[in-house]
Image 1 (spheres, rainbow, N blue to C red):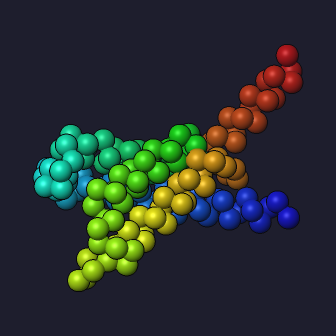
Image 2: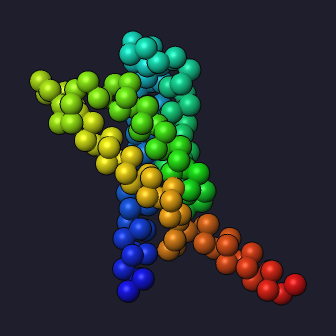
Length: 140
């Protein structure tokens, strides 16, 4: 019974990590200056574009590996809360006039909160390190 929950959490972790990783890559490939400009235009300090892009890029890779999942989950959740309240909320849940709403951001927020609360689980570096540490402690 537990195994199906572990598999579900693994899928959630991989999809969340991949989504953020690709968004981080696109911020750098499209020219981080464009993202800095966008942040400035919506009233967010431009330097935060670098912070968000690095969280998405490095955090996405770490999430896929299952390393620091709880911390990365919290960081992703903060990024999504920022995106929703500074940019997306005014567009509504589904968006208006062809613009994106906050439904996708809310979904990523929920996924991030789940991972922050529950950790990595199956096939993660966190669980591998935890198992090695427990083994060392039992040998002492």
